[in-house]
Amino acid sequence: MTFTKTALEGVYIVEPKVFGDHRGFFMESWSERVFEAEGLHYNFVQDNHSSSTVKGTLRGIHFQRGEKAQAKLVRCVKGAVLDVAVDLRPSSPTYKKWVAVELSAENKKQLLIPRGFGHGFLTLTDDVEFLYKADNPYAPEADGGIRWNDPEIGVEWGVDDPILSDKDSKSPFLKDAITGFEEW
Image (tube, rainbow, N blue to C red; front, side, top):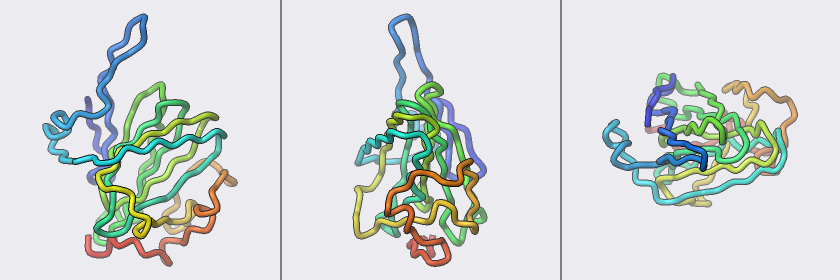
């Protein structure tokens, strides 16, 4: 695997080595040994699978608060998404900054997002299948979100009217949100 640092400390684009032939392909999508050799120590405890049927579906910006925060390793196994990580740690020099990476079944790229970040994605195709590993179990009491179009963050999604869940359309702006990352 190759690991490319992004403008946000701790956020990496991970590109697996893909071995293909006339039958298809094989790749490692996660290897504790390989990640640890890069100085990245994660104990993933939960896998999640999301399906979105329509292009223009936006999910996020999501996070879990405080001690229940989750690091994530995300990838798209069908279709394509614009995947976004947002630094929500007030003490960070990149607070409120974001990175976006196209993840697709074709390019097989992954994004590693540490704790203290918000995460969201926009489907660029119909029929998207999205997988992610998390290093903390889902905790409903710690669930949080930031409005997808928060002007203080300014993510450039490339859409004006995405398909949103009720929850995402009512998420607070960052100035009104409690992230639990104030001491990070």
